[in-house]
Image (cartoon, rainbow, N blue to C red; front, side, top):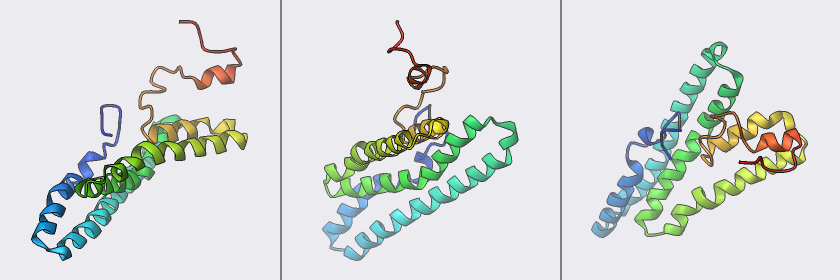
Length: 172
C-alpha cells in the first residue's frame, strides 16, 4: 500500500500495530489473558483511526493553506486520499487481527474485494448521474483507493478516448 507512488504513506502512522497483533494476540490467548486480548483488539483499532484522522486532518489543513500554490487537479485527489486514511488504517489493523486468528479470507476481503466494488459503485453512480465535470473526483477516488497510482503522470489515460469520441484504443 505504501510505495513510491503514494504521497502520504500510511505505513508510518500505524506504528506496527497491524503486525504486532500477530504476535501479541496468540501469546495472550495461550496465556489465558483474555482481558489483554480484548484490550489490544479494542485499543489498536481506535488508536490507528485516531492517528490517521489527525494526520489526514493536518495534511488537509496544510493543503488548503498552500492551495494557492497548487493546481486544483492536485489538491482534490490529495484531499480525498487524506480523507480515506482512517479507513485504510482501520483496514490494515483489522487485517493484522484477522491474520492472528488465521482468518485469511477476512483479512484479504476488504482490500481486494470490498474496496474495488465500492469504487466501481461510486464511479458507476457518477457516470449514470451524468457528471462528466466530476472526472477529477473519479480520478481522485481511483488514486485514493490505490487501483492505479501512476495514472495521469503522463497526461494520457483511457478516459480521454471516451471523451474524444474515438472508435477505440489508439494504435500502438
